[in-house]
Amino acid sequence: MALEPVDTLAADRAGWSDALSRDALRLIAEAVREMAGFQVAAVSVVRGDDLHSVAIAGSDEARAALWDAVTPMQVIRDELAKADDWGRFKFVPSERAGAVEEWGWVPAYEPADDDEAWDPRDLLLAPLYDDDARLVGLLSIDLPTSGRRPDARQRALLERYAAHAERTVLVALERHDFSEQIRLATTAREIVRSLSVHLPIEELLEQCGAALSAGFRAGGSWVQTFAGDVLGSGALHSARGAEIVLPDLLIEVAEESAHQLWAAQQWVVIERDLPVQLLTSEQSGLIHLFMERIEAASLLFVPIGAGASCVGNLVLTRVDGQPPWGRTEAEAALDIGHDLGRSILNARTFAREHRLVQELTALDQYKGRLIATVAHELKSPLTAVVGHLEMAEAAPELSETTRRSLAAMDRGAQRLQRVIDDLLLFSKVGDPDSALIAVPVPLQPVLEELAELHTVTARRAGVTIRLETPDEPVGALGEPEEIDTALGNVLGNAVKYGRPGTVVTVSLARERDDAVVTVRDEGIGISLQDQAQLFDEFYRSADPAALAQPGTGLGLAIVRRIVDRHSGTVTVTSELGVGSTFTLRLPAAPA
Image 1 (cartoon, rainbow, N blue to C red):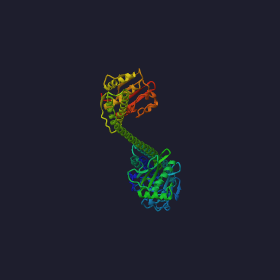
Image 2: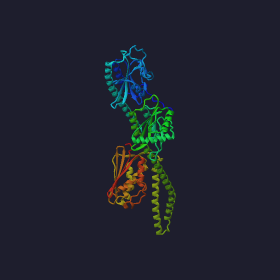
Image 3: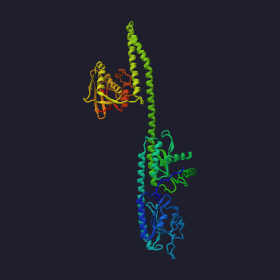
Image 4: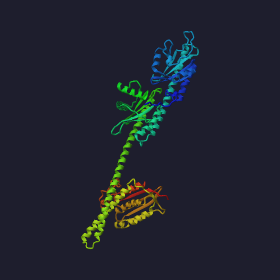
């Protein structure tokens, strides 16, 4: 598989996309050329093991030959080793110079017949060093306007110009590196912001792959994720959807190396045909063969992880003609490795939670179908039982004992009938396939009818029902029967658990886009432990006073499901021995 190079200008092959820094270096070359009395001056910078020409002043012929020229550093070191020491400048006379025409520019002119005449193959070079004495660049000048090699006075001038040029080049290099850091930091932010944990891992990594390749001017990129019980299955994810096939041995080596690098918070640059520190010669050979197959000149290998966990590795490639990987780029890639690691872990956590929700939803649906099936199967024989009880009770020759037995059987059948009805309703309102047809439901008439319906039960319990409704109509959007059932269950509970001589207050109000019904009683109250499970199906309180009242444990579970279906909420506040307040909020109908 061939990797396509990133589309960049030839002028940026050395990584000098910062035009201001490049222009500053060109001005340095121009100033040295004019003030030192030479026709050509060039500034080159060190990138990896090569010297890249980035600024040329003077001859058009020289600019054409040296523009973006790349020279191996070893060649320059060899030339400097045989140079005369002129201070900051090093002079290599033509008789000692190597094959300059193979890597540099040799002007086409005949020198004067003089021992001090400038020869076209003479070299005058000023190595430029940073504060740590590392070689960072080279200033070279050619073709003195006098046609002669510099004398002592000119050398003194050149020394000053070289010192000034070194300081200016260092500033330009720092500016360029700072510009690269800003660019890469911006790229990293864009990548992190583009990631969504709601996407599958494959889409998440493919989504950020293009930004990684473009931001780092890479020929291509891929991410290897590792397998594990906690982390999920491992895989290779290409930025462009291309198939990446790594030999099994290289997959194992990459995982082992990533763990080592993550522990040390380091990266590694792998170049074709050069040994790799982390690998054996056999392993290096395998990776070099792989790089040759995909036509990659170099790889930036970065571990991915979060905290102490290494979850994968990021590989960025470059092809022949692209610049070598710099420290700034590698550090930015390692930072992105941290962000990617967190995103991968978050995405996998989300995926696990999503699967769990799906499993729980499927289980809940199965439970609903089971409840509906059982309820339907019980309903038919129960109907037959009730019918025969009515016939038996009508017989005139029954004894009093028999009549009492039949009455007890009838009460049990009626209770079982209520349980079956609750089961069927619970199944219906919990069925996601059961469509909700919402219509405006005026709530004042509903509450008045419910209060009248529960009046007899309330009178027997010594409880008074009080309605507090506004003058203006308040309606809810929903299914009328379901809203009636939900409000009836809450009011019925308030009456059931109320104490003699107390009041149940039912209030209605409209608050912005909500219709709010509040049912407040002065009953036995609900403990905090019971409140946590109050809306669970089949839950009955452990309070003896509550258990003394008959119930199926489905009333409030039905209320919760109905309210959820209507995109509303139901809440409770309660205190033992004081009473409870239930608040239902439903979407309000238009005024």
